[in-house]
Image (tube, rainbow over all chains, first blue to last red):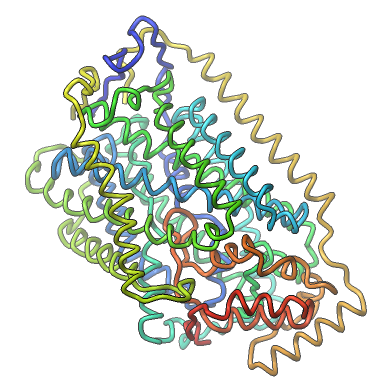
Length: 486
Length: 154
């Protein structure tokens, strides 16, 4: 089993004598599976996909075949052979420089993601307390900044074990229980003899082909499964990673599919697509759903549950990519010593704090400057483009590792790995290309300008920072005690 | 991953930290739920709410859109004033919220905008026309340039 020595205080950090490292916390494979599920799936998307009725099954299953399956199986093989997550796989399979690019892309895109996630948290809470607050920039800004820093604090104090338990609890309370409730109520609705609001016959399984709009819808849904590999960075917290990580991955894969598909279907049975009002956010759909059963008292409970699930997921995203970035920074000396600091829970506190400062500024702009909030969707496109770079690199690295390091013991060997990687790579590349097609929100302007904007954003966010780190790094930044061996 | 170089271990402190975090999170979640239960009243059913719901249903049928089998879904969720749908549908953050919903099926970092179905916005417009007509123009101004298509096809 691979092991990683915890530094006792390198050049960049506090003296060895002063360092106190908490006893390592092991997590079970089931907890890791819950963490993985919490990072990827929640009920937030259920109303959005409910508008497609039975077609949502197609919209989730096809991406599951071409993107989720390759991603999960490849990650299962890599994590059962190498600890450290995506930075380690790409470093070993391509080179440490590509490893830096991969983990940077995984980390950087989250900075722009948190404001929208927490903006959703703010509007969901406002829905039950005072809907007018949802349009109040000051309220939204305060919620985003407060909750984000609480998340940073919890990540720093909780370590992998604490985060794992909180994320698992968030999944259970915020997604699994309310999701099961939605499905049970949906089934009751049908058993009462009501006809489904959305047609449930075979003719409505495949989306209507309307050209590029359909392609955008189908291919962009590949990204629904983004993040399945992210928690592999915690594989070292399993007692038997080689056997347990694949198990966690397969279990998470099943859960994610169930969470995405069944609640969306249940909503589509009860509420016609055209009535799933979107201005008021997803809570309006849950409100309408529970209204039929005269159970609107459950609306605030579900709202709090959605918030718990969102925060549980956020915690995993705070803990995962920053840990990967810290590991490569210490191992290869790619980041200045300041960023290599970790606390007794092995959490990259300085990275988290700097990330928090940047996120705070972006979040306040999002909440308080109307032109920023209206145009924020463009950042979603850029960040997903940046994240897809991680997958492109991961699939190439997996093929290389199979041929170059065949003797590394793997707890799980993915069947037809090359085919999986080719399919996964092509799916990721297709999603990159589709990212250049202007969506609904792009109201005016030329397509060429849009393409240029997305391209520039992708380069600025994903490629430029790692290039600058490599360009200006110093030999002294390398932490001698951060050794990773397999 | 094993902490081989640890100079000293503090499992009890760590466990204490964790217990505090779990309890704090649990207490906050329960408190929010209780406050929500007290403050959230939903929409009351009344003759006026039923009349509005019938008006909306007719508007949906006229536009060729699907309507729910049970009118109470509309009365209890939209009431007499449209509920949250009519709360500043075209404000800056309201617009951002709408834009955030015209997305793919991802729940976390994979969220990305798509080309939305025309009827989704049309249904919204009919709700506004019925419950808060004074906000229709504002909503139209903010959404009329959105590019949509017939992606649902049902």
